[in-house]
Length: 114
Image 1: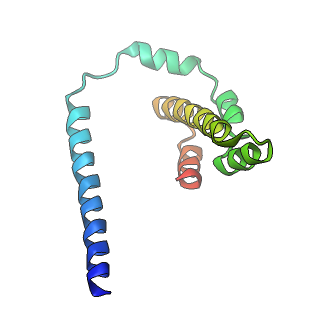
Image 2: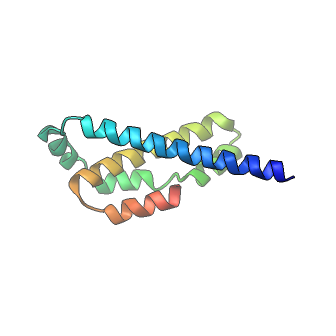
């Protein structure tokens, strides 16, 4: 029994170490990227954040799973609904971060999803 607990502890430590290594590599890669051109900022200002938020809100993951199960669509429908949710989340996150608005809503979305 103690060897099982030790193995679980080692697995948790190794997974945490892997996350730290991935974060360090990602930070170095991001630091080497050139700064974003002004065109990205202009395009982000054209996107209406309220419309993206309205499109994001209806299908949270739990709703997608229950609808996919009720309609008998199975795994494919659940995956498609969850992917649609993630696309709207990423667009909203990018636009709100670039425009420096609604970051509190973005934080709430992150806490509720993850």
